[in-house]
Image 1 (tube, rainbow, N blue to C red):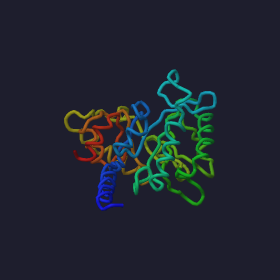
Image 2 (tube, rainbow, N blue to C red; image 1 turned 90 degrees about the vertical axis):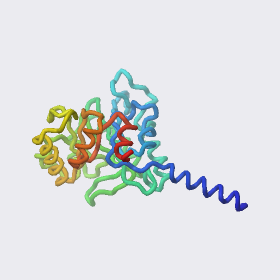
Image 3 (cartoon, helix red, strand yellow; image 1 turned 45 degrees about the horizontal axis):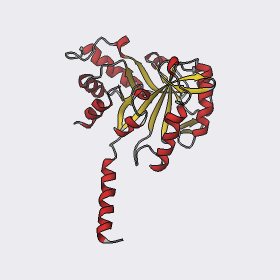
Image 4 (cartoon, rainbow, N blue to C red; image 1 turned 60 degrees about the horizontal axis):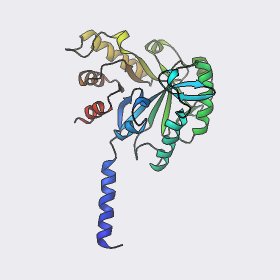
Length: 261
């Protein structure tokens, strides 16, 4: 290899490294599958958490917001699990080289028990990339699956080996669930708070958010709210309060906010 060619190779490698997005551990892509390139649009911006709504149809986990819009080609495996596995293999076991564990939030829209049974069988085929939970504790991997929506609490609580955690609600902060069953505490912002990002947040609500974060972190759970306004004012308040995941449909806007652009 000539010196000139070697120099070109070095430059191209440097550009490739610089082109890799900085992992944004607080960014959650709400309804990620509705973007033009599910998963990849979020990853290209550094998002470390994505959300997929699933329906159990004819034994397949199909990704769509409404059942009438499901397509046999848009399975959880084809849109998420398979490309996550391929990317993790290329990046040394993570979605971002040297980066953190990422999260796949699976929002169950069909019957909880039957859908979770199907999901568990699918996840068994991806243990090489999944964070798992067992008697020996937590084995961290490329991706952590969190089950939301129609959650099968009774099935998940009795599992000895678990391939996913459950998305808890604020009411779960008062429960004594088995260790590692609940990984997140999520809830509808509009059901608990009146502030929508206009003017300053009322002091009582400001303190309420902090208390929720404190209780959740004491349980080892991250915090996420949905139905929040996609605005820097809301994102700033939530992050200042310690909320772990900012829920957004505006990928570019949230990425710029978290990068400080």
